[in-house]
Image (cartoon, rainbow, N blue to C red; front, top):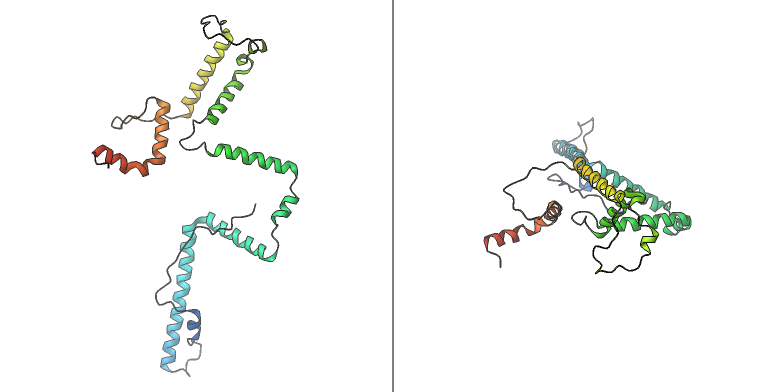
Length: 243
């Protein structure tokens, strides 16, 4: 896949005080092994230039090390990939979008489209919106798969005439196998919840804003998402100072 051409996490380093442009630094005299022909002023200027050069190199090394530590290996790896992509693009070795489409088969295109649709459907199911219609439907399909043939309705029952809402109590009794399948499924669900979730300590001083366990989890997810923005509003309402 083509790397992201956007810049990685930014890093700004403050240059050392008294930093001169390279042109000015190169104009300074340089100390050599033979300093007998140099005047004291020239030797002093050369020593200052050498000291400045050492200070700049030291600062450059410190900044490079600090940058590596702050950005981390992922950002540095991304930068290397961006530089490699930019160089390949400049040399003309980067494959264009048309060339990629020409060598893509119909099977690959269909698989990519299916993955993107699946990803788009699941994109809104994170955070506090986990009990949406799509998630509940998938849970229902899992229950049907676990129940097997016991939970299926026969063709004869499905083709019955429209039921009379006033004919209360005339429905045929439910088979014992179906009742047992429902009991087994509820028992397995309770075991899965006990194994998956750890017991949380109950805070008696915390305000009760829920009516059941599911609503409590839902409210906690909302609080994590919106509390940073509604804390002041809630405080004003409690103090009675809201506008």
